[in-house]
Length: 328
Image (cartoon, rainbow, N blue to C red; front, side, top):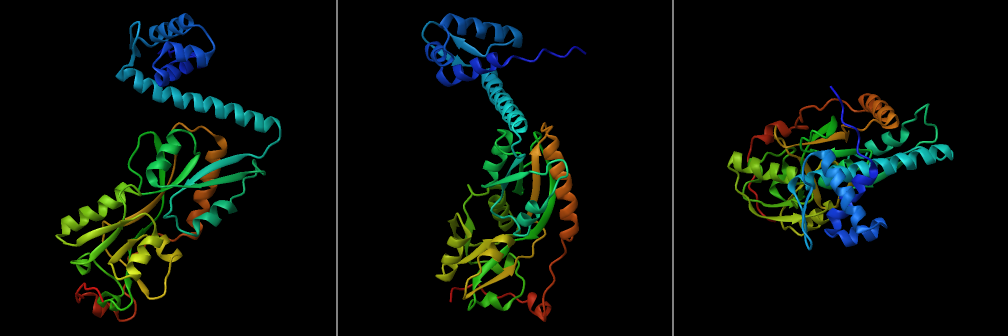
């Protein structure tokens, strides 16, 4: 099989800039070349590709569907080229090796020190740059090569990413200590029937948000108008004001304890927060590969496999009794 000859950067750059400008005049100005030169370069590119990237006449330039798909990948290729130059320059000048790692706000607190404890014999001057963001932005950061690795809660399947599950944990429910449900050690969705639910906004994590709503529908659990929040701090404040009960991840529950508020695990086989380590499927970085291998080995030593949540003390006798959901 004859492999196609890789496109030169000048072709990719011309297509990306023309897609942004939709003008040969603006593109020529940015590339510091003549309009006729831009036109020739685009004609050569389309000839190499075998399809039209842009439809144009004397006054208009319109990108085609094929052109949009091409430009998205061309942008990634240009970013890879830039990173290759930066990495080579850093190595030549003896600068530290570095990895940029995205992290979910729902990260187990013990994961961060584990990340920074990794030592690689071939990269003694390794520096980690951590960036916290919501799941959709973390995925986009990986695909756009702004991130080398990312720890993401419940990512959606993506053929462009390689993923390995690190941990999983139940949701937790924050309730006022004087609430009837505070007498229970574990909660079910049925226990939350009729409550006002405080749930993180869908833009924070679409998959987890939809998972909660879907399970309520599947179980026939009716709840009052839910309050949407962006952070655990907001959720705890509303709970403290007796507005409702809040859905939290284990990490949020551990980090944001408040006087007067009880936190109980939610037992549901479908509602689980899973943490995954993700990287681009085409990431050939030896540094990233070595780091992932060392991290996975370390994490297996310090994190036990997920276990079923068992009631504590005499909770077993209370777990079956339904407590009414009322504001105190």
